[in-house]
Image 1 (cartoon, rainbow, N blue to C red):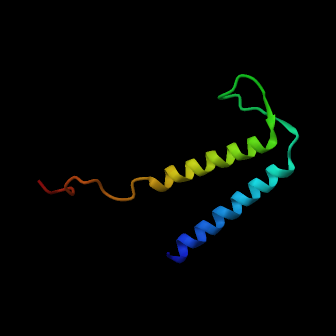
Image 2 (cartoon, helix red, strand yellow; image 1 turned 90 degrees about the vertical axis):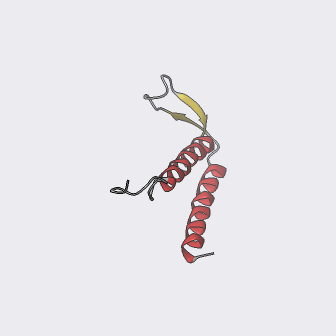
Image 3 (cartoon, rainbow, N blue to C red; image 1 turned 135 degrees about the horizontal axis):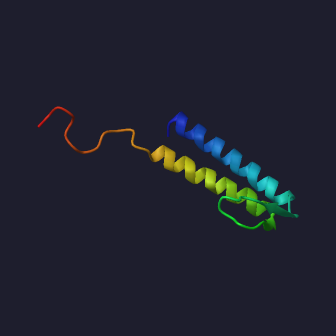
Length: 80
């Protein structure tokens, strides 16, 4: 396992710990307003909002990391 992968894993786990720690100590109800997707106010526990935002961030990061860094399987430009 390379140092880069190990470092990313440690950072990911540290961020996950912070979100779980915040969620463990914020059990009160919280209001969530996002007018683009929700036409009404959503009232839920704070840990659910933190976890949802974390999940959206992880998913967005995964999609960005998958992005097309290489060429497709077709022939290179200029060849026929």
